[in-house]
Image (cartoon, rainbow, N blue to C red; front, top):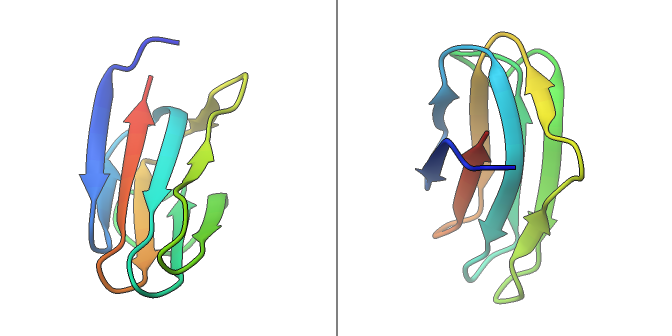
Length: 92
């Protein structure tokens, strides 16, 4: 899979406003447990959950790299938790 766009997320935000595919995701934790939920929604943290990740406080990054990309039709909204957490969502 070739990455078409990589989106950095440090707070709740729209990752994509249209349909597409998620190729991989990296969640980097900070001093607190960090969570990331990606929704098939272009404007809010609701609807179908595409992916949910958790990383331990001050631990290793959680990496999601499926064999087949995750398709979404409405867009992607990221709900990130954990002060100082960062996520990188790679669209293909």
